[in-house]
Amino acid sequence: MYARLSSASVVGISAFLVEVETHLEQQLPGFAVVGLPDSAVRESRERVVAAIKSSGFAFPQRKITVNLAPADIRKEGSGFDLPIAIGILAASGMIGQEALDGVLIIGELALDGTLRPIHGALSIAIEASARGMRRMIVPRANAEEAALAGAVEVLAADSLAEVVSILTGELAPEPVQVDSQALFERYQSHHQPDFADVKGQEAVKRALEVAAAGGHNVIMIGPPGSGKTMLARRLPSILPPLSLAEALETTRIHSVAGILPPGQPLVTERPFRAPHHTISDAALVGGGMSTIRAGEISLAHHGVLFLDELPEFARNVLEVLRQPLEERRITISRTKMTVEYPCNVMLVCSMNPCPCGNFGNPKHECTCTPQQIQRYLAKISGPLLDRIDIHIEVQPVDHRELSAARRGEPSAVIRERVVAARQRQRERFRSADGIYKNADMGSKQLEQFCALDAQGRALLDAAMQRLGLSARAYDRILKVARTIADLDGSDAISPVHIGEAIQYRSLDRQFWNV
Image 1 (cartoon, rainbow, N blue to C red):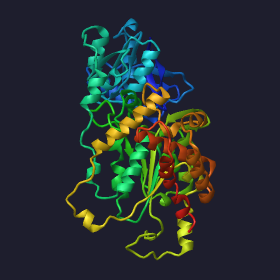
Image 2: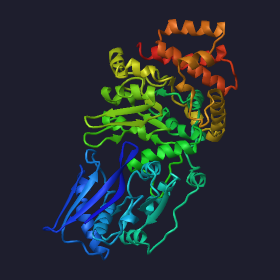
Image 3: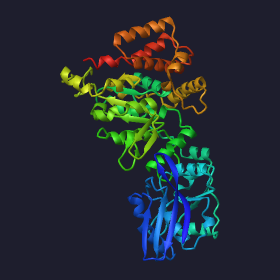
Image 4: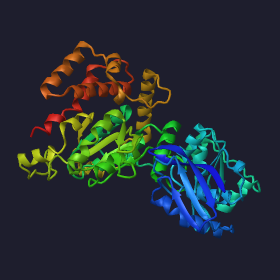
């Protein structure tokens, strides 16, 4: 006796269909799962047996062989529990083959036969739609997420017995339908940390506003307690709200990683990831031996990746960021597979200016020698620093300003200016989705949109010679100047805009040439 049905698995953030073939034979009882399953799939045998019996069905006392095709791709996760159980019941004659054709089934089984959610439901639904599947049966906890794909009929179930009733026609539930925009608005949060909480630091706030408007990378250098982390954690509150397209792409990554908030099928706020400095290079950019997972840089896609105490990160960990920051994606290659993850992030870093933290602090004397300072700063390579557009010095806030009753400018007001600048960029680049930023401009676009007058050109040339900046830094200054002009509502880049952009590169030599 033989049955065949469709399921799916995930590699990276993309899904692929898996054909679950079940064969029952009149031999000594046995249960084998083949087709390159991982340990979670192999362990499904015990869950499937218990779930079938707990649901009131007879488990066939025969030799059972389950094949997961294609057999040369590794199958991962517990989502094959339900399709394997349905395959056994279908091969036993309880479910007709015609009921399984065109239906994708996915879900994890508890020992009592109830269904538990799986990872990557949105990616699987998108693949099911692309492959022409007419229907998809998923655990109820995954139903809204899967329905976001839109083109495939999604049925939600709570148990194995309910799935059997759906396939035999005894139960005809209504397909799950969602209004993506309404769902997006429902889960949006309006309680983010606010820039109004930050006293003083007007120059740093301005730099972060410029960074948010153009999607530029930032490094903040200052002594402990000057507010670097506080400022960084408030940066998402002034970034433009996620578009629905960005939210869906971010949701795919978080769903596959299994970090979606409980009960929330859609990511509605820009991610903020702040890994500890002990992180490995594989954990930062993604990787693994048998299983390739998304790294922190991909989990921060369309959001902020914050690296606090930058020199404390291992040098090899920081160097792997170079290419992803340029290309906005990371390709991880192994012997048997290659996986690509998106990583369109704003990199925000903070660090002390020296080991003791007081170099340049007007209130405390630095106890470090020039050699100690140089060794400390040398942990950050020049090529990585070149990829950070804005360098800003953060000075301690005077206690009188901290005790003042006046609050800072709220994030909502700053965000309005940032959104207006992004709108100018969207119109300039004719990008309907609004994802394009000044930080992503190529060489041709630099020539087209960043033309300078004679005074601006002379100012930039003088800065390049005096600061000894690289060609990449030259391009970065032009991009930042373009963003500053956009914030001012100006089509042309003036010498004032160039001067402010140069100011954000002056730390290249102020701190690195002690």
